[in-house]
Length: 496
Image (cartoon, rainbow, N blue to C red; front, side):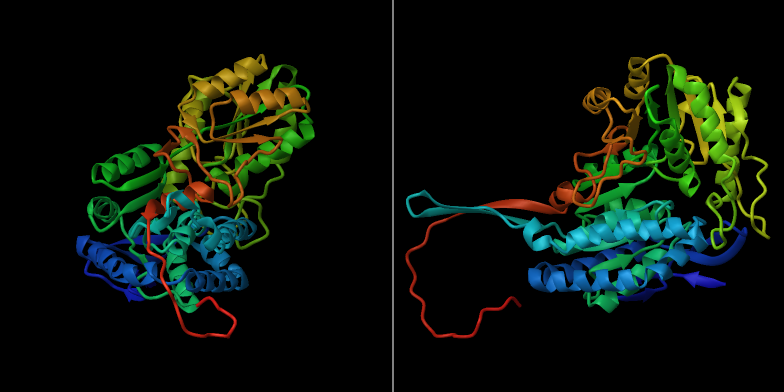
């Protein structure tokens, strides 16, 4: 059984913490390792390493930083299969889904490779007589990233490529449920030529999180997780004078109008509802079937969902297990509650037969029809393969349900009416909107993030807002006497 440690100052770090937690393969139920849980001293060692590395990395030329980013991108692309297998082994998602996660993370790395353009400032000559004004953006210092279990590679890559490219140093605290991907990426950074101390990893629980939120050496915090914890992280970090962006939970609705292509809508509902066993903050968990679309749409969704093969992600399967036995049992209780409250169980995943020879944490695709807005299966973020169908009479009724929901992460409308689609994206109170697109995750050069209780803080992840979050602006007003320079250099000028 392997021991999974920390990564501090460019090397594996055992730490002084005496606590550990089991790491389990969700497809087999077998404990495959023990992850060290950092104590306060361990976290401070990582912060100190990041602080010591910051001046040198901040002052490294953009050309140098970009070279390291490009090399990291090339290594990650070459070895993506290796990282995907590691994700499957600890998270449970099927291989194609794990590869997709790595690919979406790569997009942010590629975007960060354009950092010389992304942080260039403005210049005004002779704003006053012989007075020039220019603006620059500079790094913050050591920053912390606290990431969830459902995307152990992609979510950290929403943040650390831009943070590092902009000249910051990083302390990453991954989920203790699937910690190995973070160490794999740390080793890849070292191979890419990143100086020691620029990227550090501390494994841990609330002890580690609180130290990152409290320690004055950390200048900014990026967090992704459930809404209650996101709110806690944001409030505690900002109370300590740090920048904070905390992305919380979701209850994503898909509104299907009667004129929609119901074949396309059914495919989308199944793909977005059951991909990664529903353990996505952008998963569709509620389908709002408008008027006459209901019966036919439910039949088509059910027909497709029954073909999903649940099993070990290393096999030829469509959907893997849930991340822990406790989470599997929690999700099952929502199915129980929905049925008891009067919802119709169209497809029941509680007794699924999985393609596996072991006792994994299995729960198959589940469809509940005639769900009411008062039911817990509707109100709560379940984070599992449970799709609720809510019948509504009109577009207006569906929109009102979406806008009254406390979450505002993602939503989608399926329709062939361009006017309805335009009205929807204008009126809906949600941060990311899909039009005939069920999972509207924006590309890396746009920013990711929701509204309402799905985001605490002003800055979304990656894109322009990500660059601004990890830098701060400075305006410089200057006036100089005309200097004279001498010396000859006939060689073509180069960036170094």
